[in-house]
Length: 293
Image 1 (cartoon, rainbow, N blue to C red):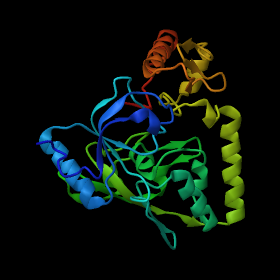
Image 2: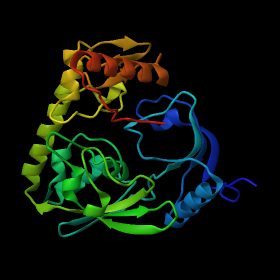
Image 3: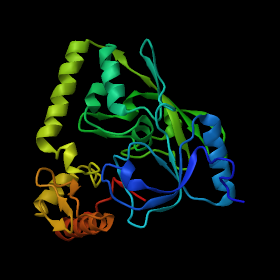
């Protein structure tokens, strides 16, 4: 009997993952699961772990590259109308893991709550934003998190403090856990001033980064301590370098954009080429920021 027997309403086999990522590349998931509540999610995780089935959690696919062979396991999609809770109680904002982060930012701005406008232009769902401690030059999500609700590998739900999450640069200690939601603590602010700052930061990114229509997964590499990955890639002469249908963006060297002729392997080969070029020129080994499945 299959691990997913009885879950046919929420589990489908051999679903193409290219339809769910910004790159629109890659092969199928062996199983694709859309749990409708915490209990179903816990049941799926418990069954997968008992059967030795590998798991991945998918939000909006903004930071994910799926290999051409696909993923031989279960991909769990936390998508609206489930897992997208959003409530405000003073400066305390409770957000579900499936909530679109840009919408979360704009709703807090309209409510006169300051902080998240500094993270304008960062795509993804709240769960992914928390798990990788997403941020940019103006800050990171860790600054606003007071607690995170997670589902552990044992199927139990726990609430972790900010300290227990272990936020560091583009990293948390949440491996093995699925983020269910978070509580953010924000400060009062003027909606007009917050909107102006949000638009200013958004426009800065628009001027210096490839547009969403160019099909990328955001920054490919993490910034090394005290350095800029984009600057190192640029100084290594990599802007415009191409492998198959994948190109290092002429606008920002830490973005790899793809066209309709691309496959996932083109992106992997180009990122490896770029990493080796930077190491040869500067002795710096870049670490990928995008997730490769």
